[in-house]
Length: 236
Image (cartoon, rainbow, N blue to C red; front, side, top):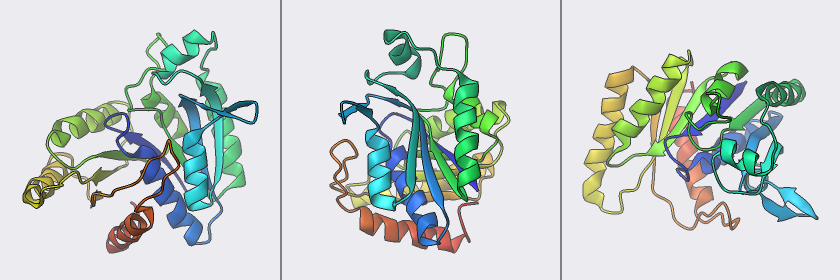
């Protein structure tokens, strides 16, 4: 069982969502891996570089974390790799992924940024990595104003690439309860536009910071996540 996590924007909640999904399968007793193929803005660790996203997901979910490429600059992978004169080779990432998949029952891969994020200047994108993995897409986005356009652009691009199995998780940003109706309508409209049954809205949470390894209300969010998924008998 494998999924690819992408987002409608940077900092949208991909890593938080990855941690929730990994924990879900770990709690089911399945041998679960988290794969961050490319990490830009890597952190200093043990006289080298490490992935803050991998650390966050591992600590919360107890899944085994992996990363192939670590770049210092917090930027688009094509640019971060150029600064270090290192080429991103798609087949190498796919080889690493396949190796991980043979060792685990579940692999949750997380992209860097959104699907259209370039890996080079030749037209290769994060979406191509998802397509070549041959796995379903799980899109993370905001539930509030603007999400119909942002989500539609990502979902349409995925369809253009032939990525047809899709699910969506939208994180509430409704600090004002009056916005709840808007968020619920956004969910309804995306279902109508794309015919996707599995669109979930997750509540607003506080105190979660991946970079600072702050878990805040993650346990409460995980409870809400599991209840949502139970309603639909799993993610897909």
